[in-house]
Length: 170
Image (tube, rainbow, N blue to C red):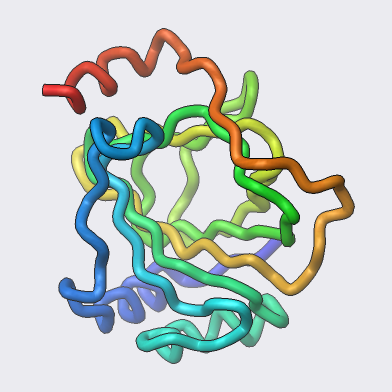
């Protein structure tokens, strides 16, 4: 298991200026997520601006293929979906923990600094009912997942997300 000091992650995050973040998504526009923002740090192995702030992570994880900062605002969500393949081994490192990660019948509240393996080839979804943003470093290693590639797909939205979707439509 990979783990970092939350303060070290927060210090790196503080070096990313506000203007580097994308605008928050709107469910009305995406039909998949709401309140989602991102900053690309590594693309196809090429380091982008601000990636150097997270060198201490790259050095421990190994060869990084792609990495983004991902933020979901309070009240934000990502509906059940499967990412498109082919897939690489993906680790999520919570920097600011808020909300829950869901896989099929499993849910858990990630902890700041404690990385978890994201099985993004399986249906998963995210809810943030917290009072603050949920900010994770999402890292795809240059390690292929041995599964036949499938396209992006969405799945039925659980009843307990109806209130989040309704508020997003207002």
